[in-house]
Length: 307
Image 1 (cartoon, rainbow, N blue to C red):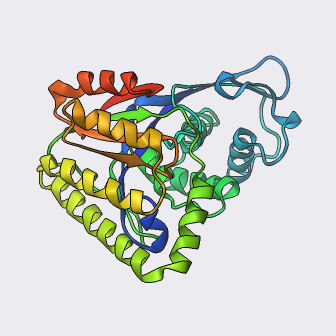
Image 2: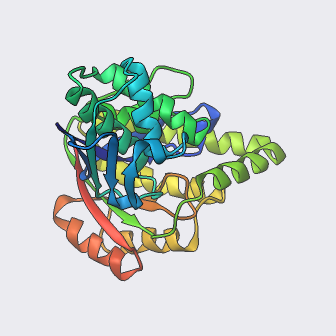
């Protein structure tokens, strides 16, 4: 049984989302995780996941292992105490620790392939719920954005503590993702913003309010088929993220390079201080913007159409 799941990227609202402001994220189908589950001749559950150098038996993994815990949680959910002998092959083109949702994508594809192989396929709602529980094991207090965007493969509008809303794009649009190649230290940047927020509450609340406005306008622009407004919104959002101290020289360099090469707007995406930036482009200039990002030091680029 085979299954696959896309990556995800945050368009607007990172960091402000921690303070109950909205965030927007979209699926990235140009990168994905593919999982194949086969019956095995030898006893046990054998996992082959070259992207994380995992080639081994489930029972030999520590109980908190990222991939092992997905399988064990699913067995528990399906009341399987004695699993059959299985070979599980996992292949991913999503870079790890780059803010593209690689962990949630592995979980979604794995749960779908494995539950279907065990003749008990789970509906999207249950897949999403189970992946969120697994995200909590590894990230403490995840937002729920990654698992929802990836499970439903749709844009998501999210406010902490409220039901996550998926929404449709009125007209497709193109973004270019540029990876700095530096792992994004999300926990660290979130902690630093919190310390600054405690020190200077009013100023930071104002920044979060401005970011919230941009997220709201962006959603309306996407839904109403006017994505051309996104460029300027991204530029404004990036300036506000710089004020939150979560950009970096590498991210700023890529943002500038994208705009110089013809992008209509660009910003960092995710935790910042590493990881990815995104640029909103006209379809015909996507390749030249991607090339400019590589020349400016990006380790890899992804061109994706949303909608």
